[in-house]
Length: 252
Image (cartoon, rainbow, N blue to C red):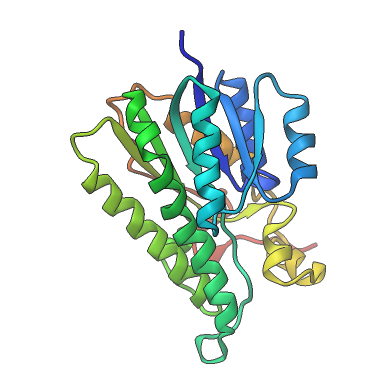
C-alpha cells in the first residue's frame, strides 16, 4: 500500500504542531514545514514516520524546493494543511501599520496560494486529495482593531471558496476551517509583539478556550471522511464564545 503523505505548514508550534502529531497518529507520513528547525526536530523526533522541511511560505524558491522534497519522498500526496499564518497588531484602520498588514497578507493569503499551487500536481496525482485552508472566524466577521487580520482572513476564505469552484470535477476536496478563540503559546503573544499582559487579557475570565488539539482534531476529522464527503466549511468556537463579539467571562 502506498505511503499516504500529508504536508502541514506553520508546523513549529500551536495548531500546526498539534496537527502534525494527530495526522501522524492517523497513519500519514507527515511533512512538517516551518522556518524554525530546532522546533521541527523536537516535534518529529518522537513521532512514527514524520519528517520535516525548513521552509518559508512567503518565498517562491523555498516553496519550489518544498515541492521537490515532497515529490522525492515517494508515495501518495493526499493532504495539504495550509496552517501558516498569524496576526500582528490591533490598531484601527486609521492608524494602520502597513508593514504589518503586508506581512499578514503575505503569510495568510499568498502563502496559502503559493504552497497550494506548488503541490496541486502532486495532490491531483494521488486521485484522492484534500486541501485544508485554516482561516478563522475573522474571515467571516470583522471587529474593531482587527482590520488587517480580518482583511487577510477574508481574502484567505475567498481563496478557499474560489479554489473549490475551480477544482470541481477533479479529485481534490477543499476544506475551510474557521476557529474562533483558540489559546496557543504564540498567537496572541505575537500579535501584541511579545506583550504577555496584553496577550493574557484576550483569554481573561474564559474558563475553557479552545486549544490547539481541538483544531487538530477537526482537521483530522475532515481529512479522514470518505472522499466523496466534502466538509466545505467548519466553524468551531469554544462554548464560552457565542459569537465573535460575545464571550462569557467569569472574574473572581
